[in-house]
Length: 293
Image 1 (cartoon, rainbow, N blue to C red):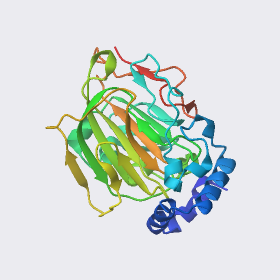
Image 2: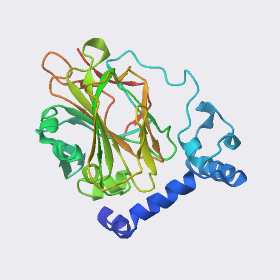
Image 3: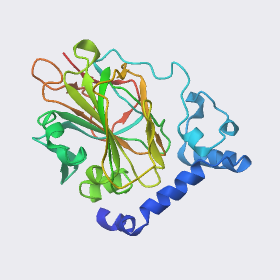
Image 4: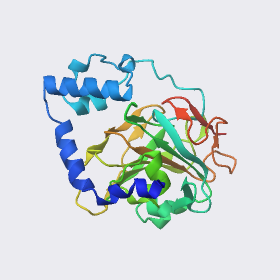
């Protein structure tokens, strides 16, 4: 069966309604029922609770608390590289941005402008730069950290669909990451060894049954889902986050897309990804991602 046929049911599912329902259920304090659900999920997906700050499934009052669990101190040390991986997961794609085109999968691409909610001026900063798309599976740690130091400039909530973002769907649904709901976070790099030069973006992409996305400076961004672009301007504020600091989280899993400009790495060049950064490779938060001059 072709990939397109295998994802056909996703076009027919009431994805928004299903996501709202799952979001409510995941937030319920169900006592023994919640504990049983957590235990079943751990068995089904092979979750390593030994890395979690709280390893007892009964310690999580809601499924959301389990899913956004913090890790024990020290289990994700930061590598001595310019950019560190912001999440646990796997590399969906990474590499150069061809003009404004980002590779989604074989024979599929989308534009930086579409990803960033139609903002051509913002998208122009990343033409000819570098991108990385990282997929978080159900078993992964679902907090998102800073790949480098940065000062927050703006945040955009872009309404959209809620297709799954697993590898099968990425191969079969055109423009997947630019059509799903997403939260665009734009930072100004610190420059030097602690950050990239100029603006860079970290995009949280929603998916089926992803109940919400949250950032550390705003809290829960969605819901609400008013169906229109929403903007927050932080340029006049001093919202600064250090390399490795938590910046957000998914309530149920999804994908992040990182965008860096053509001269973000210094010397007129974009960041240079580590040799092991290839599609399909597993990654962990804090490992070396790219070098910057």
